[in-house]
Length: 429
Image 1 (cartoon, rainbow, N blue to C red):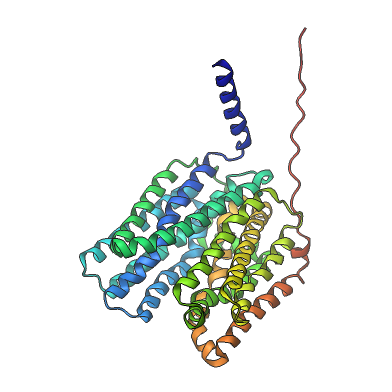
Image 2 (cartoon, rainbow, N blue to C red):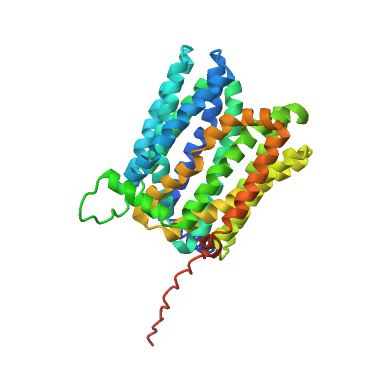
C-alpha cells in the first residue's frame, strides 16, 4: 500500500513538473477558448438556417454574414488599443458578456418565431463588434501567459484546443440545428459566452505598463502603426495574407461547394473534405509541440505554398480522396504557419504593444476577404470555374514565393532559450 501511495504521489509530481510551464492564465484562457469556440462554431450555422426558415434567400444569408464582418473590421483597431490601455482580461470579460446578451436576444427572437431581417442584421453586427474588442485582447493574453522557452509547445496546444473546439462545434451545431432548431443553438452559444466570461474573471491581472502621461487613443493607434510598419517582415506577411485569405475563402466558401455539387455527389462530399482540413489543423499541433525550427518565419512561409493545394486539386478535377489529402495538407500548413507566427510576434513585439499589433495583423489579414468572396461568383462567370480555381492556386503560390524575397522573413531566427542558473548543493556532515 505504501509503495502504491508513493508511486502515485511521484507520478503526480512528475506530471506537475512536466506541465509547470502552463501557468494559471494559460490554463484558464485555453479552457475558456474551448468553451466559447464550441458555441461560436455552431452559431453561424444556426443563424443561416434562422434566415432561411423565415423565408430568406441565400442573398440575405450573405447580408447577415457581412453584417457581422463589417463592425469587426471597423472596430478592430479601437479594440486593440483599448486592450493595451486596460487590463486585457477585463476587456475580454466585457466583450464576452456583450456577445452573450446579443446572442440571447437573437435566440429569444428566433424561438418566438417573429424574427425579422433587420433584427438579424442588427444582432449579427453586435456580435461582430464584441469580437472586435475580444480578439486583440485574447491574443495579447495568450502570448503573455507563457515564457519564450515554452512558446512552441504552448501555442501548439492552444491552437489544437481552439481548432478542435471549432471542428466539434460545427459538427455538433449542424446536428442540433436539425434536431432542436436554430433558436436553441443560439441560446447554447449565449450560455457558452457566459461560461467563458465567468472563467476569464479568474485570470490574474497583468502588470500595467508604466506611463508618465496619458496619451490619447489616436496617439496609441499611431504608436501601434509605427511598430507595425517599422518591421518589414510583419507588414509583408500581413499584406501577403490579405490576398491569400481571400483566395482561401473563395475556394472553401464558394468554389468547393460548387464543384462538390457538380461532380462529387453534393454537400456530404465537401463536408468530408472540410473534415480532412480540420484533421490537418489539429493533428499537426502534436508535431509543433515538439518541433522547434530555428528560422521560424522561413519555415512558416514554406507552409503558405501548401495553402494552394485545395484550389489546385479542384482545378485539376482530382477525385475526392485526393482533394481530401489536399485539404489535410492545407490544414497542416495553417497550423505550422500559425504557431511560428505567434512565436515571432511574442519574441519580437513588446508586451505593451501586443494587442495593437495583433489588431493591425487581424485587420490586414481579413480586410479583403468579404470583397473577394463577393467577387468569387463574377470571377467564375468571367474566367470559368476552372480558370478561377487556377487563379486562386497560382496567386497563392506566387505570393508565397514573393515573400521569400524579404530578407527578414528568411533570416528571423528563434531566440535562444534562457539558460537556467546552476544551483550548488551544500551538504553538511
